[in-house]
Image (tube, rainbow, N blue to C red; front, top):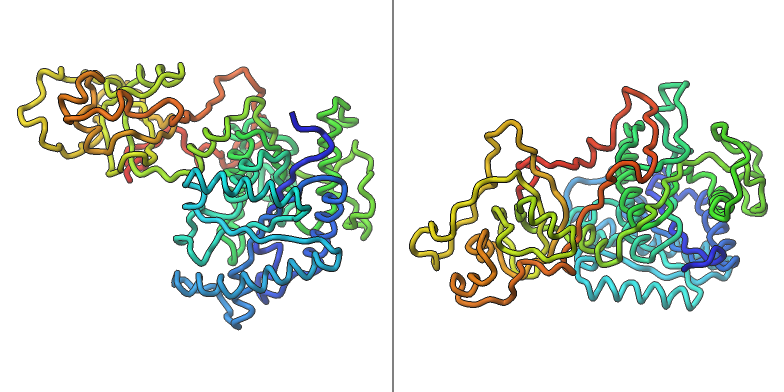
Length: 474
């Protein structure tokens, strides 16, 4: 069990926190405070990681380009130019405090390969042992558009990879609100979120013109990190000294010290000293304004997280409810429980697992002649019965057979695989160790976050739990 003293803290900074949106000039005042905060926490014995956007924005300034282009090769070229200067800036700022840093660039392919995923974990561990602060960014020069999606998601995957204690998503607002505080003076801050799926908050912020994320991507990142047991915090980037105060406050709660007040949090004093890192021992009964996403009390295992969020699915396997129950009972996926297949995928590639309503399956003795001829993968079963449940994605799996092979053996007993295919690599379409199921709250385990506004946008709309058939097409 990790001690309370030495923590792993991931701090994510978006482009709008690093450079000015219009002039693309580095925001040295904020960056300097971030560096001071990171070094102070590091000297206190904590392991610090910074996930930094901004390569493209810095490249725009270096090349005197006014707006971010739409042509992908041009964007990637600007990222290549900007990444050098961005790291030089970080190195210069940390160098004043004699703190070594390292650059780590990741892409989806780096995370999708299990060996490379573990190599990244080992590299982080060795950097921590050497007293180095890693600076992480997605490798925009090589990534396909945004292979991971955005740096909010990258920071969540990084935090999960490191089994971090805290993930700070720094933004241009103090916290989440039930309504847009810029247009609604009566907006109420959301202090603690216990159930991300039940959260109702304003997510109308679409991010800056330089970035790819917004408030909605931060909620997705919070859900990913929380599922791995990481406490996720949204707070204002212009007050980086608040990071240490919030950590101290959260640690006091974990140690069993009750919160002194149940009143809504208020913004930090605007006194210039409130932005300084020189006063980290503060009155923890009055923490800076922030939104805190509580970690799942039963976090998923590292390999399960990698299967769910590190791999891009290449197809879909539709299974019946019996197969789903068997998987939930730690059994592997047998061909008899497979209803249909969609997409083209190879052996040992990732697929979605989707439960479909019960449908009478033809007997294997009714299969047409010429079964040894590969059959075309068919469309998912239709839902003519209005009372049928819609398809529900329940997890991901690495498969032992390709799409055409699974289409030929679906619904059969494992003993029939060799007679149909001419070989049988495994009795299972997917071993249980290569299956990760999506964890869903069964109700009653944790109190749901209260709905704060009937007109608020629900995260459920952003993260659909029951995808339509069109959503599942590859």
